[in-house]
Image (cartoon, rainbow, N blue to C red; front, side):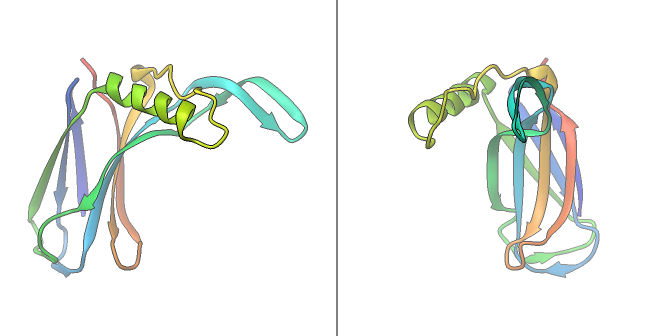
Length: 141
C-alpha cells in the first residue's frame, strides 16, 4: 500500500493505493501525535522538570477496516475522510485523564496544534503486521 495524507482545519483525508493484488483483512489506523511538549519526566533517580517529550500519542481517530472487501487489486484507491474538532478531542483527553485514567493528573491538555502530526498506518488484521505507515503535519488553517 501507499498512503497519502492531507488535512485542513476540520478534516483529514487519507488515500490508500493498493500496490499488489492481495486477499487479506486490513485495518486503517489514524492518530494524532504531538512533539515539543515540555513537562516533568523521571530520568532514573533524577526529576527533570523541563523534559522535551516528542511523538506523544494524543488521540486515535480511527481503527477500522480499510474497505468492505478482503480482495484488493493493484492500482485500487481507497479514500477515507475523518472530520474532527481539535478542541473537543483535547477536552475529551483531559476529562479522561482527570476522571478515568488510573492515577490521572489532568495533564493531558495544552495541545499545540502547530506541533501536531497525523500518523496513518495499515495493518494486517490477522497477523497484526504493519504493512505501511506515513506521517504528515496537521494543517489547521
